[in-house]
Image 1: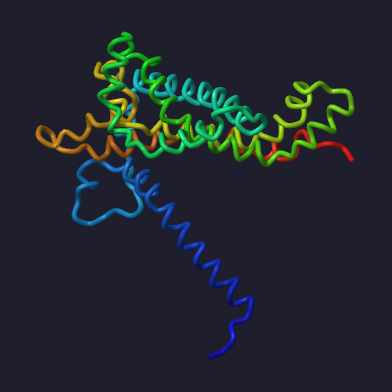
Image 2: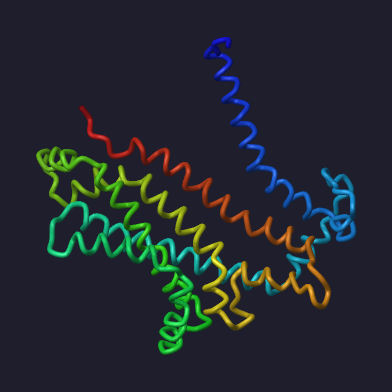
Length: 280
């Protein structure tokens, strides 16, 4: 058996990477391309790989629907609030767990892990009754509360690892240069935690933006639906059948805010890797 050269190994790895990339990109391409096809071509027996005779009718119907704008506003409001509140509380909790030793610290960490093991569906009834008693059903605040509760355990655990990865010596060096403990943390440690804050922010954004089951339970008013719940209106197979053109167009539009958010925070992640470094 001939010995494989490093070049052959590299070419094989490149080919595998290309295949994985195509496998990831093709579903997205299929969604976008179907959104430009009329309904009869989408359901045709022969699949259309390239939408040469495309149309914008699906997008016109979606953008002309007032419910889409309402659902977009609701989803953006809930998602941005969830990300902001979750990062704030997770950051404070992660710093406390990582930098301080207090009674019940290990219990708190184990509790975070145990909460992650509880199926979200097991909490629906209690969450519904809680929000109903507080008068927060069909409200952005109510849905944000349950989203934050679901996102916090993972974000605290993730940020704790990032805080642990920042050496205490950096803060001590800054304090020797005249900074107080608070100033040392905010001027040196906090900038180095930017990648962790971005990672948890991306996780929280995707979780809140794509979440469906809790939104169905909490937002029972059609005027308060989030985008994933609003999308179900096009799958009424009993009356008019599944409107695949509208579903694909809506899914494409729903994906855009996630892509924009990721592109914005990606730059922050790269800059945060070098910010706050101590000069030698």
